[in-house]
Image 1 (cartoon, rainbow, N blue to C red):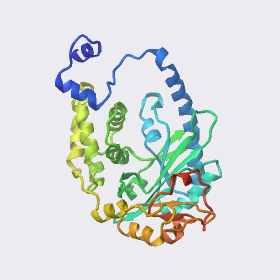
Image 2 (image 1 turned 60 degrees about the vertical axis):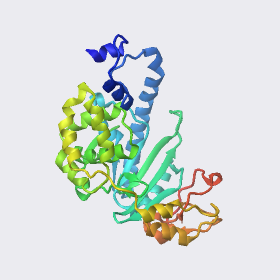
Image 3 (image 1 turned 180 degrees about the horizontal axis):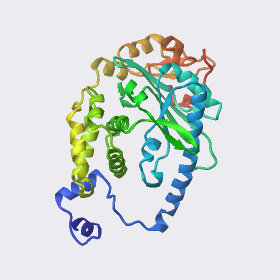
Image 4 (image 1 turned 180 degrees about the vertical axis):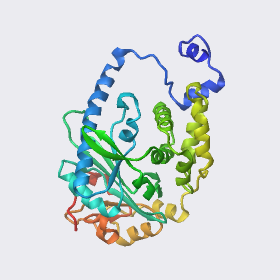
Length: 349
């Protein structure tokens, strides 16, 4: 085949093939085992550590009465041969913002700590929040990374995708390290996958593999598109469809992608008022007034919440925003870099 000749350097690529090469890496490449042995060893170790962490986090949240679901990596892994898929962190979706404080407190008890201010915003779609946590480990060259989102993945700094009641009712169970972990159904994951593709705005080879295994699992593509009605996430899957079109190995995916794209809006602009509010820098990062935080929330812009045990900085208490942000202080801008440290998870107010 011409593609094989190109990879072997015996034929020049056409302009169309050159464009495809820029979009995604070549999936079929010859790898030297001596060059990849360290990477393979890392992925083997990472898979074991993250599997144990996923089981621990899921059990911890369940014991705390927090309704959660494991997204992305592990949720997709169950359809891979031998359940082998490369990823480096955990993503959990929480059902209710009111459970966020309870979840953070429960995770603190098993060694996790908040590493950046919690981002929260309020819009026509409702409340949204995201927290980044880490847990030290000696088994990897980096901590265990855990991202929490409520009530679903982010799309832009001002919008998010809310997991629907049908997503929660149709969730399934996946055994990881002997623990049954709640994961989205294939149909729910297809909607979530579209959101992630739009959020990253890039396509890599793994995306083609993910979509291939996901569509083989038999999702209801029409239902997935219906769940995304009005959500501006067309860009990511449009780019993915272009990459698939250039790949002879994955042309069978085109009908399903085309069907999904047909039901998605082409996108929309950032809310003008929210963009204007978010663009206003504070006069000093240590002087953020409660009125600024309220104004940001009123116009749909994000606010940044974090513990402030010494009350050194003014701000709006999280409990005044929403019970789920209990114990946190909200500001309309991130704190100064000197204050961006690993925070202790706050007690509930």
